[in-house]
Image (tube, rainbow, N blue to C red; front, side, top):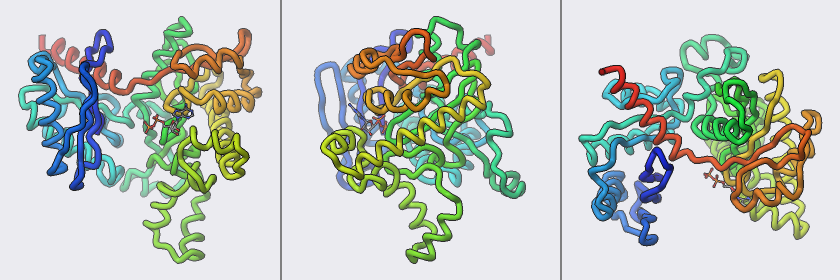
Amino acid sequence: MKFALLDVRSGAVGLSGLAERLGSGDASARLDLPGGRRSVALPGGTYAEAFAVIAGALDELGVRGDVGAVGHRVVHGGERFSEPALITPEVLDAVRACVPLAPLHNPANIAGIEAARAAFPHLPQVAVFDTAFHQSMPEVAFRYAVPEAWYRQHGVRRYGFHGTSHAFVAAEAARELGRPLAELTLVTAHLGNGCSVCAVAGGRSVDTSMGLTPLEGLVMGTRSGDVDPGLHDFIARQAGLGLSEVTAALNRESGLLGLSGLSNDMRELEEAAARGHAGARLAVEAFVYRLAKQMAGMAVALGRVDALVFTGGIGENSAAVRGAVLARLGVLGAAVDPALNARAVRGESGRISPEGTLPALVVNTNEELMIARQTQDLLAGLKGAQA
Ligand code: ADP
């Protein structure tokens, strides 16, 4: 569980941190305070202990009374949520109803929400859904060509994820381009351990590469992205695997890791590829190829592309990946300015394409700030409605 105390107006971070290995006997919390970094053991491995550490840190900084709300990232909001929601018992039930769609994520999100409500009972709590931004996708983009009953009865459709990040970088890109978001068509690429691209028209998602689950689409760190749906049956028979073992392998042993046989870490793969490691080279090239293909495909959803946006750990840091992707996207009128592209590595966001070509930007994502902003906007709206 990542956490941060944010000043919504300035974006300043008062404290941040990470609680790791929750649910196990060796859980711990890392706290980054103005005075330095500290690690605290969480012997019970519970969310309640993690929130006690956060509350203690707020007291230590003397700012507990200034906190206005808690915003939670919730992975799956199904078709119910196209906006952030004030967490009420009904909303929590709706998040619970989405557990079958995100069996690994939503139970953890619910546990976090319950612990936060216990730790800060007087504060409003808001859920910001990773899927919500994509609820604007048209039906042609979100429906699978499968029996209709699967959709009606079981919610089998494309939902998309990373919505908070795609929405944030689209707005930042508009600012960078000096044009209103409402007039722009953008292809945004969030490239972290999980990767997805999004077609953003006028600030709304009209298509994205992830689907029912975050497994669809691009080659990712350990996730396969798109495979032939016939693969499950084939490999289950050939390798004597159960369905859940196949799914686990596609989630945890595939992607960059599977292709390279070495690592899921792009930095490590770039270094190994430079030393001549064939698997690493193939993994990076396949990552780039599939990404470029998906980005070009998003042009169909948009009709016209005004700019390309790169973000996430790989998008913000790997000049090599960005350069190779842009080189493959000549079909869209894209090109790379090597000097600008190399400079963007040092955390500067901005343009990496030459004048007169399709603008390509690097934008540093900030999901925590987006969650905080959306939380504040929702509460301000509710207050306005009451007044
Ligand atoms: P998460 O999705 O877990 O938030 P990040 O957005 O931090 O992950 O992205 C992690 C990925 O970013 C890893 O593949 C990592 O290797 C890659 N990355 C980070 N820094 C660099 C770098 N300097 N060059 C290439 N890849 C990098």
